[in-house]
Length: 310
Image: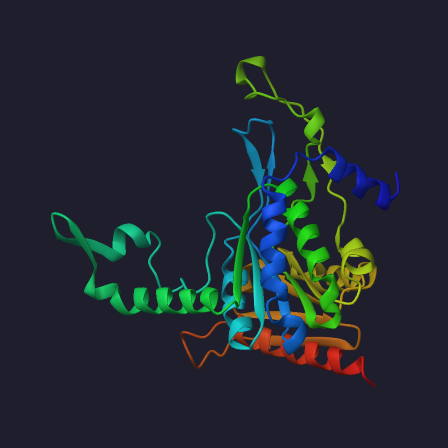
């Protein structure tokens, strides 16, 4: 079965995406509010890991490691750089503007003022004020649209809708694909409907390979968009080789290579013209590697847009 047939088969067999027409309407309103006339750039940032359900009425699933921190932090820097951001994120993962909040913000940041009212604890007041102010400003200003997913089926269907909606932006569109996408899945039609019973003995399950959507994103869905994918490995010896392979195979404009243990300190941006090392500013404890990474990619995107007119 060729890749095109595999992709068609995946979407045909996937459970229908809930509220797909509402999602499309939201996207069209967000993307076209001022982007075409102003030349504003729009980036789709994907964030968090996808799940693979093992039952149709899902109780058990296979998960992918990802906190969503990179996508959430990068979203802040893209907005700061003037982009409109479609934040396609896994439910329950890190959110933009919330990195300074504690792990359980609702219970830790608030306290009872009296029997009928709440207030922000003084120790968290600045962090809460900053998060609420920045988030509301981004949403109200038409710079941030958040769309959640959980399963691999939701993620890929939503990515396709987003890509087709952004197609008209041509080179002003960017995809920053930081989500940890499952490599294997259980086809919906071959999945058990109800909870798998442990009393039945050992579980023997055949997983299919998830079709690679990067190539169809580049060649069919949004062929003019500036596309960045990510490659995470635990073995640094094979990391750059795998990133280079992905760059060529899927025709990415850049691949961000990151090793599991050092991913918060440094990454390598792999391009056709060479590799670029990007490091966090270690002289500032609060600095993040996403800051210089986004700055570099914004510059490369600018060059890509200018090249169209030369």
